[in-house]
Amino acid sequence: MKVLWLFAHPDRRSLSGALKAEGLRTLDAHGHQHRVSDLYAMGWNPLVDPADYAHDPADRLLIGDASERAYTHGHLSPDIRTEQQKLTWADTLVIQFPLWWYGMPAILKGWFDRVFVKGFAFGLADPATGRPQRYGDGKLTGKRALVVVTAGARAATLGPRGVNGELNDLLFPLQHGTLWYTGISVVPPLLIPGADRTTPEAYEIATTRLRDRLLTLPTTTPLPFRHQNTGDYDDDLLLHPHLTPPHPGPAAHYTAPPPPAHP
Image (cartoon, rainbow, N blue to C red; front, side, top):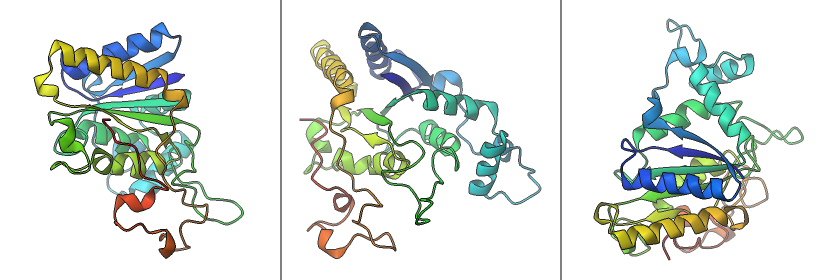
């Protein structure tokens, strides 16, 4: 594998930092290549700005158009181009972060906001039909991703009956709305629960699970998201009525129930 490890935690001495170090050692030991984007260590700027696109701030900023022009003509800011080059090089993306307020840290959201611009991550259309190529098809099709999440909550509370909600539902905007949207296949996430109460025994279990998931990542069956353009959705991008499961929401956009994030 050629792995881009995208990391968002402010302290490398944290549980998250220790897991990242162990994950990179595992990749090295088994002959995989990796590059790292440690966003806090890099001082990554998460804010979209006209300067990202060499855009005149006196003119109205239409993000999609401005970013696509800048990408096409080579005018994106250097930090964005560097991250795009890393992702282009990689065939696998590991996205690691602590679950804060039911989502990713703002610095990580800002990485996607600035790096996944139109023309680079999305914006293709089928030349025969004119239909947009997204949700399973797109510029990044052929890559796969693993989301590694640490959480202070107990595992059961991030399950189907847990008060915090099922983890795949919480990650749906990232896994489906960002990664799958751009064509990236997403394997089931890895949840490391009880992060604030880790014992040596729990840490050993966590590192074992991480190593196992990394080494089996190339052959792990991805989450069974529906493709946009294979007949499940009508021309208005609505699921055909006969495909809607008894429970609405994210479950409707899987062809089968996803496996639990923490068995």
